[in-house]
Image (tube, rainbow, N blue to C red):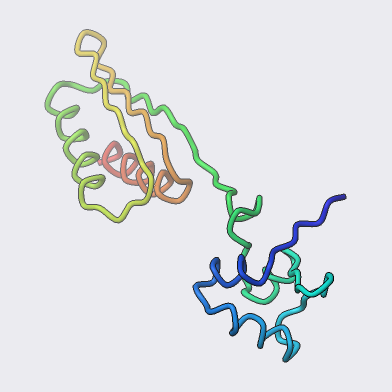
Length: 137
């Protein structure tokens, strides 16, 4: 298994610190490092332990989950479809919702409103609860 190693310069750049600061952390024993020749190398695991967060570029730092949902609401007339669409659109436009995309389609001949949601798990869950509340009232 290949171990991912960073130079002192790479760690300094990732953390936004001076190279000398990183070397001092290594010399003081605050940051674990291995000396290879005349240079220090810091493993990804040791960097993550030092910072308490996944190292930039690591698999854990890149991990992201999204959900896609299709909500079909039957028995909806035009005024109800407009009301639901307005509430959904307003909740999205108020901002701070993370990554979220919503498409609304109303089939007037069948009385069906379809809401397609793509986005972050927690934001999508909040929007689905909102839709449930609107539909039940």
